[in-house]
Amino acid sequence: MDDYKIDFGELEWESPMAGIKHKVIRRGGKILRIVEYSQKLEPHWCSRGHYGYILEGSLEIEFDDGVRVYEEGDGVFIPDGEKHCHKARVLSDFAMAVFVEDV
Image 1 (cartoon, helix red, strand yellow):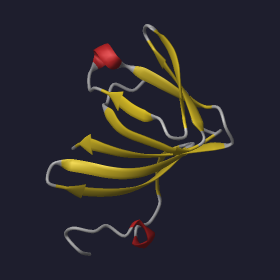
Image 2 (cartoon, rainbow, N blue to C red):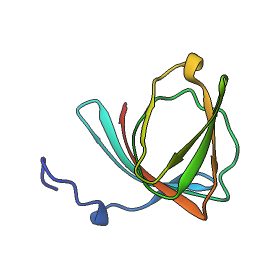
Image 3 (cartoon, rainbow, N blue to C red):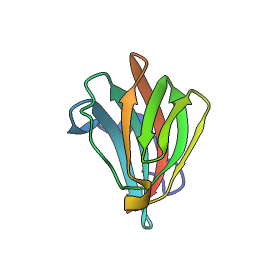
Image 4 (cartoon, rainbow, N blue to C red):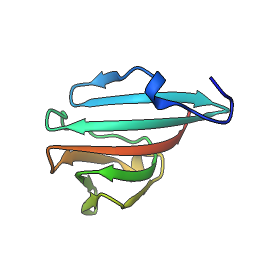
C-alpha cells in the first residue's frame, strides 16, 4: 500500500459492534476510518473524540446539553473526554461518515 494514498477498496470491513462497520487505517498516531452505521446500532455512551464529515444519511447525537442532528455534508467535531460524552442514533436507513481520530 502506498504511504500517501489509501485504497479503501482494498481494506476489509470490520464490525466492532452491532450496527457499525468500518474500514480502518492507522498511521503516525492517527486513525482514518470510513464508518457505516445501520438501524441496528446499539445505543451506547461514547467519550472518544470524533472529527469528520457525514458522507450519507443522518445521525442524531445526544449530548448532556441536548441533541444535535448531523446530515450529509455536515462536519463533526467532538473532542475526547467525559465532558463530551455522546450517544448516536441513525435517523436514515444508514449513515456513512469519514473520521480522523487519535490512536
